[in-house]
Length: 466
Ligand SMILES: NC(=O)C1=CN([C@@H]2O[C@H](COP(=O)(O)OP(=O)(O)OC[C@H]3O[C@@H](n4cnc5c(N)ncnc54)[C@H](OP(=O)(O)O)[C@@H]3O)[C@@H](O)[C@H]2O)C=CC1
Ligand SMILES: O=C(CO)[C@H](O)[C@H](O)COP(=O)(O)O
Image (cartoon, rainbow, N blue to C red; front, top):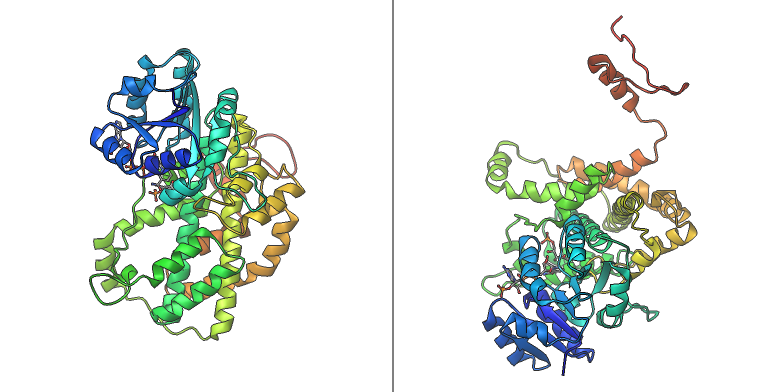
């Protein structure tokens, strides 16, 4: 009996996704380059049918074949595709569920089209647990091919409270992997925002971990409720197994990355879209890697630190509102990149549907996404969420606290790149007149680059030093 779907790549995510599919009642064949991994996995999970030989794996599938790839992003995907293509038939469907770069996905779609193979680039978010219990799924590419796998993919996905699946067709070409990339850019900024809040609380409570835990618990229950806040509460409560004290205090502060956040920033440069907080989050991970320099420099430049003269209640209320304002700024930046690239590449991404499928199963799952949906429902064509009445109302209630928090934190010599850039983004994007007219004048003065005038059409050049 042929199986309904195949999955190639039994790593952390692949095993969980395969088990998820099998648990939903679909018959599934699995394959891994290391055969020992396949054997061990299928012994442990008998619903998975493993193959040691790739040709047998492909032959085991009903036609048109549907094969999900869950392997390391980059060259590995190309080499896996090369090994599969000679065994496939016209009309078969490959669905790359890893974190592939969306322009690589578009190249692969073109190359495979010539061989008659249909290719779906599909973002998956939720980590190991989400992949097993129901992730958020972002498929893009061949729409007809997606229709043929939709019943399996939507069954795998997380569900929202209203019963809708956290999976929707995102758009043509690399649209699925594009939004997953921006999801990760937002994820980096949200994680850094939480880390900065942790730094502020450590400073306020003079490192008293019990008080920091209680404060986070409180923050995680309000409008900031999110998957990342929830796991932060768990992390902060975890004692070390080996030594006295909290495990997080033994974790090195060197933050690593696999590349999706960096790609988000690179693409923002290519499309000239300002996403300063998402970029700061990447830069901060780079900065964290200079551990030796930072340690040497910290001895040369001791940080002045004094207790903040503000009551605990006032501080916690200010922090909550400032986090909310910063989070709003982060999402406005992320969605402005999505909107802009979607227009230029004609992906036709539906931002309401996207915010809906990020409400559950994924790493950036958060209560705040309801507000984003509301804002886009008000006017789907917003180039920037900052223009919505939802943002107007919420920012008028919170922006002042962000200004105060940044001022206080900077005077404590704390490193707050997300709070600061989020505030600066909002102060810039809501400013009708920036001082960048001077930059235009300088460019024209030293390089005859010309400038536009506020009172006339066309390009002008002046002799500024006359
Ligand atoms: N971990 C996470 O939270 C998430 C990961 N992702 C993405 O999913 C993909 C898989 O991630 P994850 O499961 O964590 O990674 P793992 O490292 O756990 O698994 C990678 C898989 O790729 C296989 N592989 C590696 N090199 C080759 C090769 N040359 N030829 C064939 N197969 C190869 C591995 O086989 P073997 O090990 O047996 O050699 C393994 O099955 C990545 O693109 C990742 O970015 C997406 C969302 C969340
Ligand atoms: O896609 C993911 C979650 O959505 C992965 O966990 C991703 O690997 C996280 O990125 P990085 O390793 O760069 O921090």
